[in-house]
Length: 336
Image 1 (cartoon, rainbow, N blue to C red):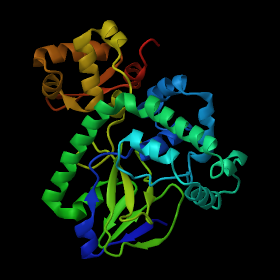
Image 2 (image 1 turned 180 degrees about the horizontal axis):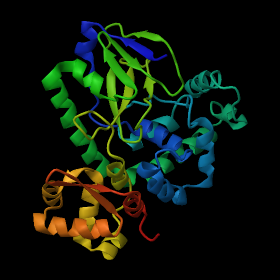
Image 3 (image 1 turned 135 degrees about the vertical axis):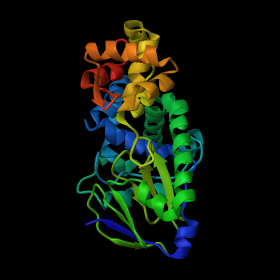
Image 4 (image 1 turned 90 degrees about the vertical axis):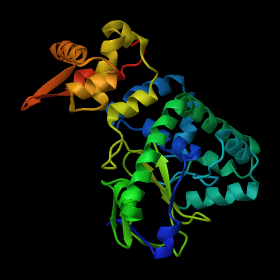
């Protein structure tokens, strides 16, 4: 059964879209993804890059942030401040607050690591935990911030169009069609935990937080003040679906100079354009890659012959898509 958010007219009026992903949430979800092998096209290259640079001590964070289940949050995970400010605030939290949050988290777990009992007693234990969180943010999120910001900006423009064209109901129904469904006045949400409950917002509305890493199941806090929040995947299409896998992958990995050296800069651009826009026509491909239609057709033929793309014909139109081999090549980190 889904989780059900009950809206009043006042709730709809106060529901808003956050202007950017939240640093602590992105670290939380990134930690979950690093423990999994899900979404290989989207995240495998990123995982390989990140895991090569992470300290083995990050296992401490894995112990308090499982791939599925409740994670230990000492601050509001949807806090909107800069990462450095958030980490500094966490280091200086009162012991009583840390103890209370740790005990509340432990009560929802069958077992807890023994070292977590020292979080509210020993500042050194808390400092080590926060240092590791900052380390993960520095290695897993921050290197891609500029490109992720560009994806989020495009998402914001799309959400605005949804509101203008169809109102808040259209926005809510397009956030995450696989896991969130709007049936006025209820937003039904399928959680990874299978949680089943009725939540009455009581005039507070709902904060909708974009997430690049949270591509399927949402995270949420219905007790957050002053406003409950829920994450949704940054979108890449008018349908509100999650970003195309290769588009996310390209934002989470450094551009490969090796790929350009192998294929040539223009052909590498053509391959990436096809991967990010499967089913594009030759005319569309030329526009995306900023080359002539004749050149686009020539490069698409070479890529198809090499088994990196495939082309199907619909009447007189050629439609280009990437093959698994092309995805593997695009997602391979530089130097591999």
